[in-house]
Length: 314
Image (tube, rainbow, N blue to C red; front, side):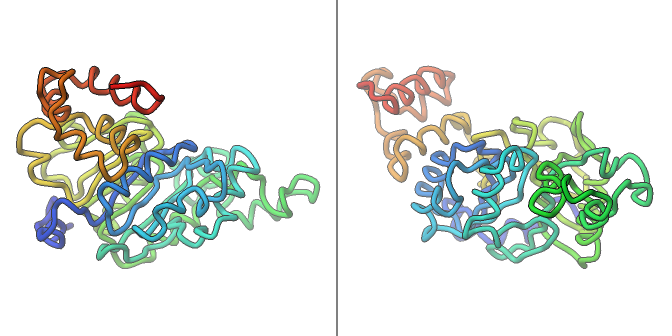
């Protein structure tokens, strides 16, 4: 197994820590303005949406302002099959070919593997051997269905976000990857799965990033995984993001404003967010919003941003 976060994973972007190679976004649930604002601010080489996108229009239309700024990739989540519109706005989009599910793609210099969707026991309970799965593939499930039970002559819409054994095994056949993105969480999470860890270890990844549970988790910092673990794990909250490689100052340097506040500033000001955060403000006793928030005043700065966003005067 590879050593924990070997230096080569960070070294590829040492020359420009302010412009991350990759950014991973937690479940948008239709709010893609935040994604647009963050990308306009940081302009990463590529982004990955971690599922539950639920775009209100075709994804390429929703993300049109950043199509020329970054490469856009995604995995789907369980809510992306909640309605015909959720499904069509993702899989019917011009960005549909950017779905990482079941494959490994080189993105911004990293080999990135993707596993979208969730485990459903009607298909495969991953606590049981894979050979005991009720349906090894979507085709196998379709063959058991009557024509009137099918959706668009295939399996039900709901189960198009279920993980089938063949999806998982397809990734296992690849030789290696640097990063694994999943909607489901690994075993260290209270609602995670050991098979996610096994996939990550088999692929030899150094980083695993997941969505689904609407919480920001650094599994190392939170004590959920040891420093000698073969890979590092992050969960990304709904409406938040993770930049990679990590800025060393973000891990060892002075306190920074909460990540959700930085994201809100990007949503309100776009590429000018940092200018606003670093400018002294009279309502904050002459301090900058960034410094005031880092010192414990994040709620007041958040209120200011909300007021600006909704037409108030600050």
